[in-house]
Length: 459
Image 1 (cartoon, rainbow, N blue to C red):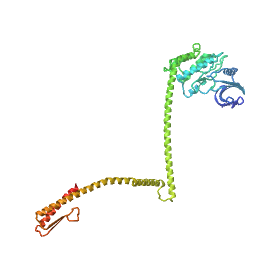
Image 2 (image 1 turned 45 degrees about the horizontal axis):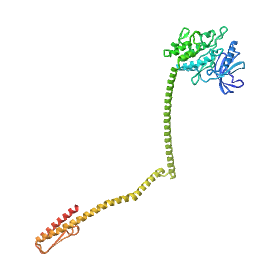
Image 3 (image 1 turned 60 degrees about the horizontal axis):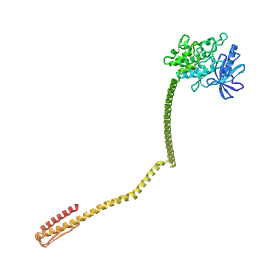
């Protein structure tokens, strides 16, 4: 850590890491154990100073910072001498320097640059409004921090200043490209900080160093550097800030920032906010869908795992049942249970059929067939009466024919045809010459009577 002390001020400050160094100075990040807050400690080696002027500048910086109090500046904590070295302790502002952003290839949009100009305007008005005015003299991307909330702070540590060789009785302090032309003459003034702010803004818009930008004479060609797509009001403000002649240059940022107007930036911020809201909405929607899909997959996996566990438990029960029966071919317990369940259902069905359904069916059949049998008996009775009447008629016909044939000594006996064992007609003829004829006629009449009876029964 470049021979950095582990503890300073009798152990109050614990050094964490080196932030930057150069020349006779170095800046460290440390922890104030007394306050429990991170701090930045700048160390200046008095013994390595080339002139007393450098030591005077370090002491002047400590005295000036001790008198400042602004949200855009680091808060002074203390300064002290230890081991022949000067130490300046200030609050460490969280954020990323614009130089670090450039190193990773990032730039600022117009809306961010306008916000930077507004924040810088408030800081410079505070510094330049003091008596006597405080001129920073070294504003550049490494000395500007962008906080997490998007605001900007002006610092003078994190990277050691590049010191140029003194000319005459004045000390030239600044960084080439960001330093106003009058600073080369050792004449730093409030307008010099305005020039540095403009150079920093153009550098962050283009991602290029000021010396690499197109120039017109001694002035940076802002319009050529930013292109035609840049807002005219912003180009006009930057041109006024980067005027090489300090007498023609804008002495304050506030009037230039006011001319930029707030409506366009607010509108852009509004659109950006809407875009961010939409992006966040879609992102949340996608996250919810992913979460739902993940939950469904987890539930399915859990169901399948439970099914697998139940199946394994069944297999284990079957294996135990098999072993319990000595390994014989027996029906596994679950299958036997299914069979017994089926037999139980069948037994219940038979019981219900025999005790409930069968009596009901038999009763209905008895009612239906009882009616049919009664009708059949009635029909048979009617047929019997008709057959009996036919037999009576046959007897009369046979008797009349027998008389017509004058058969003497003949006896005719006609019996009920319903008796199949008895002869239908029996004719006894004694001592007559026409017995055969009489018998034939009687049989014909009997046959006719029988046919009549059958027709009657069929009806």
